Length: 296
Figure (cartoon, rainbow, N blue to C red):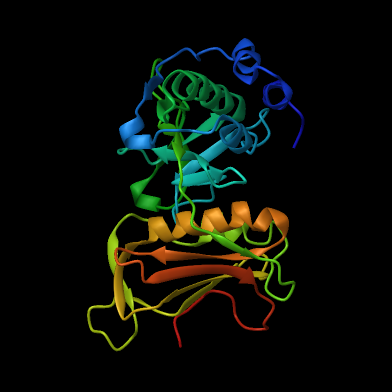
């Protein structure tokens, strides 16, 4: 990834005695059909400026366009919902599609500028998270007759983008391990966390096989199908619990951000409505088929 002016302004802000002023000098509100809104009730209060700068720096190569689309329905740079999390786990930059959208493209420079504006206006002035709606313009249309084939379509003049960017607080509950035997190298879990594991928001019953109400049988192991060097283990300390994969995915993102960058594995306990579930992200080197295994 190349160095960019926008990322340079983030670095300068971190080194400046007045980081807000430093970043404001390099930040202007993008023009167009985007809608900006600060909302502490929805996206959290007490954002930590330096944590959010750390998360913003992970938006990749600003000279490129990046694709956004749903899991299992194409090969996208960002499978939405998608999350970039700061190294301390306190600030999340989320990408989501508008409710009626299938997919879209957006330039990294537009994403960074929108995120910087949110950070300045919402974090500095109101100490809260916020959202930018309608980013992106280069619309992709899925053809129903040949799904999942993809056909490019030129957007109409003034057509709104389909991508929403959110800056929100996150409260991690993560414990890292420094054991070499269980610690994956950083980068080995990115495909698993970013593309492979489910992250829908439907509430499901997780638990042992013997309970008839269980939809997701535990323990469950998901192995990174690309590197085959990382695995996510989801298990329970109780009989059953209700949870959404979205929350388990969020915990896995936090482990990878907080522990994986230090070449460590980790555990996120206290998941589910009754806090019975836990997720472990760790090294995988067993010679078995990659995928999902629900056998005990």
